[in-house]
Length: 301
Image 1 (spheres, rainbow, N blue to C red):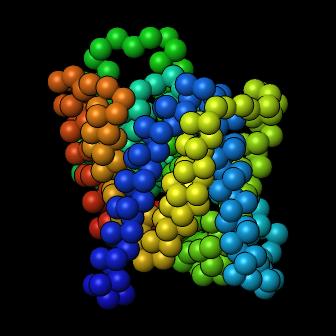
Image 2 (image 1 turned 90 degrees about the vertical axis):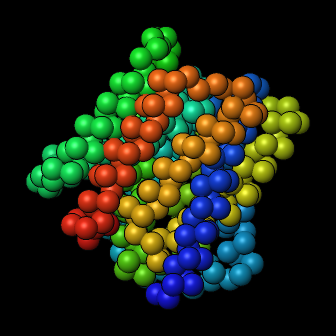
Image 3 (image 1 turned 120 degrees about the vertical axis):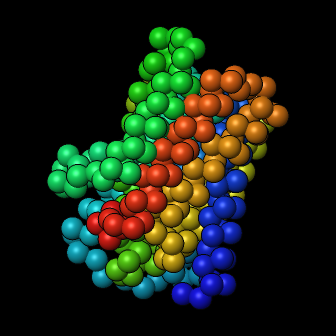
């Protein structure tokens, strides 16, 4: 891969992080008139239908996919983890928590990967990884020095579960992209379709038929077409040339982007302890991922 191709992929990934950062603000506004699961279900259903229609127009779906049952199952699991779990629970978490706190918690996703690898793969963290983990946990302690409400505790647990789902999705998509048996467009369309279907059923069962006003409808359309269909396709495309841990590090910049956007558009102010907590978490997560770059990249993808 040339330097120009790599630079282009990095710029594409940064564009996606900005679009996703703006999503937090738009979702918080939209949640004033719509239930969280219904909001997520309509967003991803509309986005998946858009991608499928585009695929039909481009005749992307005209050729048969040579995938076995195990690979289809992996696509289904990736879709459920990346959309139904990660994105669906993120909407619910935003219902309970400020936008900055939600994205702050999602920055622990790389740490989840580290801990799960130690528990299930026998990959013992190195000293620098353990240091990064300790610093990140210290950052979480400092960030939450201000007492939180009981409803916010529920939100914290929900967002942490969302982060676990996203970690699974990132690793599974990277695995498909390395093999190259399925194109980026199809990969995005199929996984999003599976996740959207589960979200839609869950929303109907738990919340009933969703409804919204005109402004909410316009937000959903923008989120579906630009911040979802386009952004997720571009994100999965960058996984052809960038490793999952590299994208995770770029995703960490969303914490700063969202803090600025939430302060400007939502009036969410950052206290001194929250700013310090953010700095500590970003430092700790970066240490963990730098070490992954040097030693365990093949295993983590």
